[in-house]
Image 1 (spheres, rainbow, N blue to C red):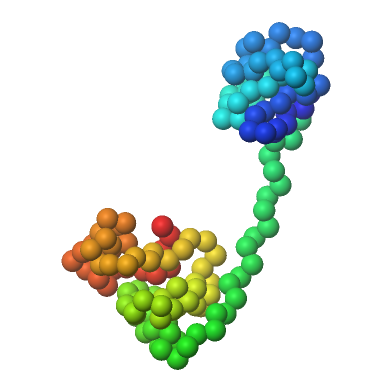
Image 2 (cartoon, rainbow, N blue to C red):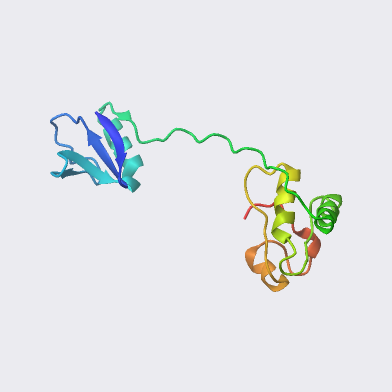
Length: 151
């Protein structure tokens, strides 16, 4: 018996001629002549089959994705390099405040590259009044934010 993923559902292929009504969500699909269950029932289907001692080859799990490649260095203008250096000297904490269109996102990409950030993303906001709402920093302490913190 094989358990497959197909178009958002689980498919039980090569199932034995048994009553499988004990498997949560499993129904007969006459279009393909196989049993089918919603994908969100994956753990329940596996558990129900295992509890009855029915062996099943699980072909649902996708192979693990490769590790993400390291960040590439981002070319920065002199004032962007200065902002990044100031952030690094402040123990990778603080705010980058620059005019619209001046390259704040490029500074953030440079910060991720220089810090070796593998996952997560910087917290970027337009105005200080929304920082407390997104959890980036308390309103009373601007020094507590971290550009490398995950959102």
